Length: 230
Image (cartoon, rainbow, N blue to C red; front, side):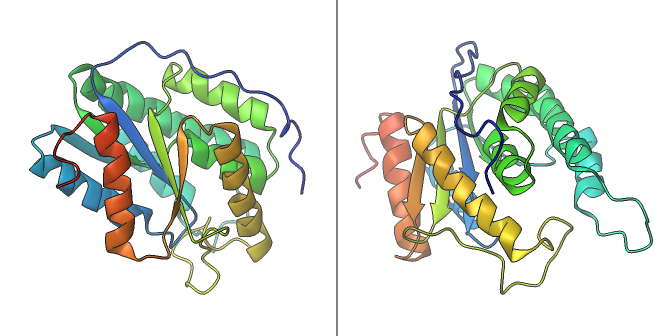
């Protein structure tokens, strides 16, 4: 499935400078990103950094309400959330999270580790559902005030990203077809090529510990952490 506008060039967001470091972790379900986010946060804290861990959708009171609407499976409802509404709801949740949580933390010099961010919308609603990428990009830059991560890790396994094919669906989006999740996987690889200055594809075949060490090495270099190799 070709996404309309998938070959366009995106201009990077022009976020104002901040004293912290904004890190996002991405991947399809069962990729291990939440585990790696937890491990990264714990490691950063042992190094003495002020760290904020958050997630998407969610992370603030309003955003969590939107999350419950986005992810619940309502078998009794005869009205499905449209791809357009889904895209806007994710952006609305993100807007609240950035305004109330992420931006204040970054301005105070905190390292922010976020489980999913704008790349998820590009992969899931863009490549997955066919919403034009340019529209998703513009909507989300408006929602976040142009705030993009300084560093993004997309977790995968070799040349393929994990899928949720063998895992029982926990929410409405996980329950979508194998074809949908395949489009999302391909979308993440396309984004990694387009944003190679920011996105790092992480091969997770070495296991949780080796993956965590690899991520720490890159983050440590960004932070100029002299102890990162210890």
